[in-house]
Amino acid sequence: MIEILGKTSSINVRKVLWTCAELNLPFTREDWGTGFRSTQAPEFIALNPNALVPVIRDGDFVLWESNSIIRYLAGRYDGEALYPSDPFARARVDQWMDWQATDLNRSWSYAFLALVRQSAAHQDAQEIEKSIAQWTHNMRILDARLQETGAFVAGASFSLADIPVGLSVNRWLGTPFEKPELAGVSAYMERLGKRAGAASYANSSLT
Image (cartoon, rainbow, N blue to C red; front, side, top):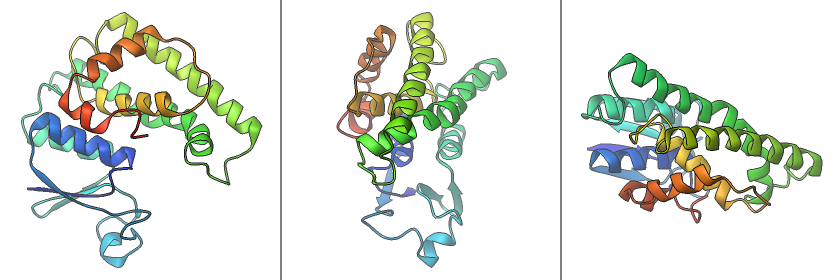
């Protein structure tokens, strides 16, 4: 049984939960993080010296970093449909996962913390505007890709890449500012919404 350490309000924890749902993997989960057990506790630091969620235990195997975790789960538990072994197809999945973790994440971070989390340290109006502009730019890149595939971010089939990307789109939808119409993104979220994992872990009330 997979053990997941981390609170469900964490977007990175929800990546792991959604992946488990796609793979029909049973798991247990413990609440760790702000408002719950501290990730600075010695027993947590022993598992992840970065003091960040999620962490998983799979028997004696411990792993942290959310994208590494979901790649591991797909590789270990018959997730070929999500994370193909063909090098070309796998590279496309990895490309969009890495784009979400770098360019997309960096662009939405300030605006999200300011407008949703109401962080006192993120209330500079110019920085909020800058973050929104870059976030919108990246969402237009995603929209163009989705209109090209007419389906999912890595191609015609749902893949591991759609989990982090779909969760980031959820944050886009749940953050209060004026947004352009993105037809490809809207259709994409309708497709994702038909999946049980998305229904549980990727809707606009779970930013």
